[in-house]
Amino acid sequence: SICGDLSKEEVEAAVRRTFANLKASEFVRTLADKEKETPLQKTVSGKKNVSFVYAVCGFLAPDNQSEELFAAELTAMILGQGNSSRLYRNLRERKQLVYSVGSSYYGQSGDGIFFISALFDKKNYEQVKSEIESEILNLAANGPTDEELSRAKQNVKSDWIFNQEKVH
Image 1 (cartoon, rainbow, N blue to C red):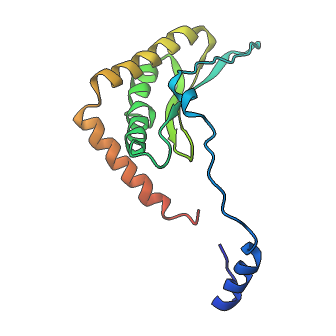
Image 2 (cartoon, one colour):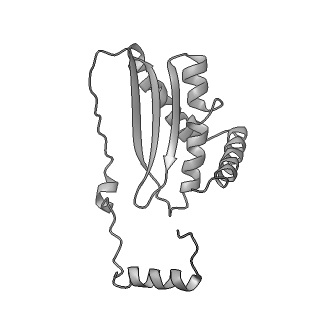
Protein backbone atom coordinates (compact mmCIF):
# COMPACT_ATOMS: atom_id res chain seq x y z
CA SER A 1 0.00 0.00 0.00
CA ILE A 2 1.20 3.45 -0.82
CA CYS A 3 -0.03 6.75 0.53
CA GLY A 4 1.13 10.34 0.55
CA ASP A 5 1.52 13.31 -1.71
CA LEU A 6 2.64 11.30 -4.76
CA SER A 7 1.47 11.25 -8.34
CA LYS A 8 0.45 8.06 -10.08
CA GLU A 9 3.51 8.36 -12.31
CA GLU A 10 5.90 8.66 -9.33
CA VAL A 11 4.38 5.59 -7.70
CA GLU A 12 4.54 3.50 -10.88
CA ALA A 13 8.18 4.48 -11.43
CA ALA A 14 9.11 3.59 -7.84
CA VAL A 15 7.35 0.22 -8.07
CA ARG A 16 9.04 -0.60 -11.37
CA ARG A 17 12.51 0.32 -9.95
CA THR A 18 11.93 -1.69 -6.81
CA PHE A 19 10.58 -4.87 -8.37
CA ALA A 20 12.19 -4.87 -11.84
CA ASN A 21 14.82 -7.51 -11.00
CA LEU A 22 12.52 -9.96 -9.21
CA LYS A 23 11.80 -13.16 -11.10
CA ALA A 24 8.66 -15.24 -10.72
CA SER A 25 9.15 -18.49 -8.87
CA GLU A 26 7.07 -21.59 -8.52
CA PHE A 27 4.99 -22.02 -5.37
CA VAL A 28 6.18 -24.94 -3.25
CA ARG A 29 3.74 -26.67 -0.92
CA THR A 30 4.87 -27.04 2.67
CA LEU A 31 3.31 -30.48 3.17
CA ALA A 32 3.84 -33.19 0.57
CA ASP A 33 0.73 -34.93 -0.75
CA LYS A 34 1.91 -38.33 0.52
CA GLU A 35 2.18 -36.88 4.04
CA LYS A 36 -1.45 -35.74 3.83
CA GLU A 37 -2.57 -39.32 3.20
CA THR A 38 -1.32 -40.46 6.61
CA PRO A 39 -3.18 -39.05 9.60
CA LEU A 40 -0.79 -37.21 11.87
CA GLN A 41 -1.39 -37.31 15.58
CA LYS A 42 0.98 -35.76 18.03
CA THR A 43 0.41 -34.80 21.62
CA VAL A 44 2.63 -32.31 23.37
CA SER A 45 2.10 -31.63 27.03
CA GLY A 46 3.94 -30.36 30.03
CA LYS A 47 3.27 -30.68 33.72
CA LYS A 48 3.43 -27.83 36.17
CA ASN A 49 1.85 -27.18 39.51
CA VAL A 50 -1.12 -25.24 38.17
CA SER A 51 -4.83 -25.16 38.89
CA PHE A 52 -6.00 -24.67 35.31
CA VAL A 53 -5.29 -26.34 32.00
CA TYR A 54 -5.24 -24.45 28.75
CA ALA A 55 -5.57 -27.03 26.00
CA VAL A 56 -5.46 -26.55 22.24
CA CYS A 57 -6.00 -29.26 19.66
CA GLY A 58 -5.43 -28.58 15.99
CA PHE A 59 -6.30 -30.27 12.74
CA LEU A 60 -5.23 -29.81 9.14
CA ALA A 61 -8.02 -28.05 7.27
CA PRO A 62 -8.82 -26.84 3.75
CA ASP A 63 -6.50 -24.21 2.34
CA ASN A 64 -7.70 -20.75 1.34
CA GLN A 65 -8.19 -21.81 -2.30
CA SER A 66 -10.43 -24.78 -1.49
CA GLU A 67 -14.18 -24.75 -2.02
CA GLU A 68 -14.37 -26.45 1.40
CA LEU A 69 -13.12 -23.35 3.22
CA PHE A 70 -16.71 -22.12 3.61
CA ALA A 71 -17.77 -25.40 5.22
CA ALA A 72 -14.76 -25.19 7.56
CA GLU A 73 -15.70 -21.64 8.60
CA LEU A 74 -19.31 -22.63 9.27
CA THR A 75 -18.18 -25.72 11.18
CA ALA A 76 -16.01 -23.57 13.44
CA MET A 77 -18.98 -21.28 14.10
CA ILE A 78 -21.36 -24.13 14.89
CA LEU A 79 -18.91 -26.10 16.99
CA GLY A 80 -17.30 -23.43 19.09
CA GLN A 81 -17.92 -19.76 18.38
CA GLY A 82 -20.23 -17.93 20.73
CA ASN A 83 -22.61 -18.77 23.53
CA SER A 84 -24.93 -20.75 21.25
CA SER A 85 -22.18 -23.06 19.94
CA ARG A 86 -22.27 -26.76 20.71
CA LEU A 87 -19.08 -26.83 22.75
CA TYR A 88 -20.06 -23.80 24.83
CA ARG A 89 -23.58 -25.06 25.56
CA ASN A 90 -22.45 -28.59 26.43
CA LEU A 91 -19.13 -28.11 28.20
CA ARG A 92 -19.70 -24.75 29.88
CA GLU A 93 -23.43 -24.38 30.41
CA ARG A 94 -24.74 -27.94 30.82
CA LYS A 95 -21.81 -29.80 32.34
CA GLN A 96 -19.83 -26.85 33.75
CA LEU A 97 -16.52 -28.49 32.86
CA VAL A 98 -14.75 -25.46 31.34
CA TYR A 99 -14.29 -21.76 31.97
CA SER A 100 -14.03 -21.12 28.25
CA VAL A 101 -14.08 -23.12 25.05
CA GLY A 102 -14.01 -22.24 21.38
CA SER A 103 -13.02 -23.24 17.88
CA SER A 104 -11.62 -21.41 14.87
CA TYR A 105 -10.67 -22.01 11.29
CA TYR A 106 -7.71 -20.25 9.72
CA GLY A 107 -7.42 -20.64 5.96
CA GLN A 108 -4.02 -20.00 4.44
CA SER A 109 -1.89 -21.07 1.49
CA GLY A 110 -0.92 -24.68 1.88
CA ASP A 111 -2.97 -26.33 4.56
CA GLY A 112 -5.44 -24.44 6.70
CA ILE A 113 -5.74 -24.94 10.44
CA PHE A 114 -8.82 -25.83 12.46
CA PHE A 115 -8.38 -25.69 16.20
CA ILE A 116 -10.30 -26.03 19.44
CA SER A 117 -9.16 -24.45 22.69
CA ALA A 118 -10.42 -24.70 26.25
CA LEU A 119 -9.58 -23.49 29.75
CA PHE A 120 -10.58 -25.75 32.64
CA ASP A 121 -9.62 -27.30 35.99
CA LYS A 122 -6.94 -29.94 35.61
CA LYS A 123 -9.16 -32.57 37.28
CA ASN A 124 -11.53 -32.31 34.29
CA TYR A 125 -8.93 -33.06 31.62
CA GLU A 126 -10.07 -36.54 30.55
CA GLN A 127 -13.75 -35.62 30.62
CA VAL A 128 -13.22 -32.41 28.63
CA LYS A 129 -11.13 -34.30 26.07
CA SER A 130 -13.84 -36.96 25.76
CA GLU A 131 -16.66 -34.41 25.45
CA ILE A 132 -14.85 -32.44 22.74
CA GLU A 133 -14.24 -35.63 20.76
CA SER A 134 -17.89 -36.59 21.19
CA GLU A 135 -19.10 -33.22 19.88
CA ILE A 136 -16.81 -33.47 16.84
CA LEU A 137 -18.00 -37.00 16.03
CA ASN A 138 -21.65 -36.05 16.56
CA LEU A 139 -21.41 -33.07 14.21
CA ALA A 140 -19.56 -35.18 11.61
CA ALA A 141 -22.14 -37.99 11.79
CA ASN A 142 -25.34 -35.95 12.00
CA GLY A 143 -24.44 -32.59 10.53
CA PRO A 144 -25.75 -29.27 11.81
CA THR A 145 -29.39 -28.48 12.43
CA ASP A 146 -31.10 -26.06 10.05
CA GLU A 147 -31.15 -23.47 12.85
CA GLU A 148 -27.41 -23.86 13.54
CA LEU A 149 -26.56 -23.56 9.87
CA SER A 150 -28.73 -20.48 9.41
CA ARG A 151 -27.26 -18.79 12.50
CA ALA A 152 -23.70 -19.63 11.43
CA LYS A 153 -24.24 -18.23 7.93
CA GLN A 154 -25.63 -15.02 9.40
CA ASN A 155 -22.66 -14.74 11.78
CA VAL A 156 -20.16 -15.18 8.93
CA LYS A 157 -21.92 -12.45 6.95
CA SER A 158 -21.99 -10.13 9.99
CA ASP A 159 -18.31 -10.75 10.72
CA TRP A 160 -17.44 -9.94 7.11
CA ILE A 161 -19.41 -6.70 7.23
CA PHE A 162 -17.89 -5.61 10.56
CA ASN A 163 -14.38 -6.42 9.30
CA GLN A 164 -14.90 -3.98 6.42
CA GLU A 165 -14.91 -1.17 9.01
CA LYS A 166 -11.21 -1.76 9.71
CA VAL A 167 -8.35 -0.59 7.55
CA HIS A 168 -6.75 -4.06 7.75
